[in-house]
Image (tube, rainbow, N blue to C red; front, side, top):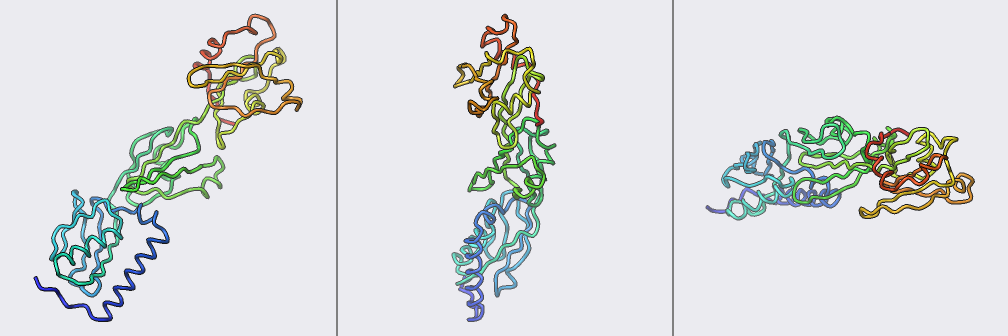
Amino acid sequence: MPMRNGFSLVHAILALLLLIGHSSAQTTDPATHESLLIGPGDLLRVTVLGESELSQRVRVRDSGSVTLPLIGDVKLGGLSTDEASNAIAHKYIDAQLLKHPAVSVFIEEYATQTVSILGQVAKPGQVSISTPRTLVDVLSMSGGLTEVADRHITVERGGSSHEVTEVFLSNKAEDALNANIQIYPGDKVLVPKAGIVYVMGDVGRPGGYVMQNNSRLTVLEAIAMAAGVNKTASEGHVRLIRNSNGQFHERELPLKQIEQGKAPDELLQADDVIYIPFSFGKNVVMATNSIVASTSSALIYAGR
């Protein structure tokens, strides 16, 4: 088929400006363009500058292809709008229909697509969205975070990039909204389980305490969350039990010195166990395995 000559000098200049505009947009915000990927059911507006008869609105089939005038089927599923524009332009060039086609693709309407929400949410699984939504929105659609959810949330972008971003979602409403990001169809959101520290023995409220918000918890903070040490406790024999690669190691914890400011208030790690024995002798020598076993039935507290 002979090459069409419908492009005037004005059209060529406009085409160049359009291509420069696409390049600038891609350089300014590549992550945004990469996230807005074309999927089955999407309604596209395809514009070929200066060739109105080739411009049209078309819906993407389940195969990811669309049918366009003169060039037939073009595979656009999984591409960004810039990549789709280039793919269509090359089709017209390869078919020797246009010399310098300036093609623009715009997603007029997203089909309903899914976001996978995994981990510590009330209803893990897939939620359907038709347009980009905020992280808070999609988490609420999955029932919200559980009490033991870590606030460091991982987002994996859909498409070919699989870009991974970690977002800190604070307990404070204002901070959470300010740190919010857009979630796009095809993304995956992983909410891990927060670390838990156990305070067992002669305290006001023995149990497990979630390392919420900044995932940092000190000895004194953990004991305060457990409603403090009882008067009957033996503070001179406090033990810290730590899980290291499946092996439990214990050492004495100088609680009195920490309380008096004579020793530093130590940072705890996830799964640490602080055991504060009763003053009478039979519990002072309680075995490490017995203490650790008791944590499996301990109540978990998420509030500060």
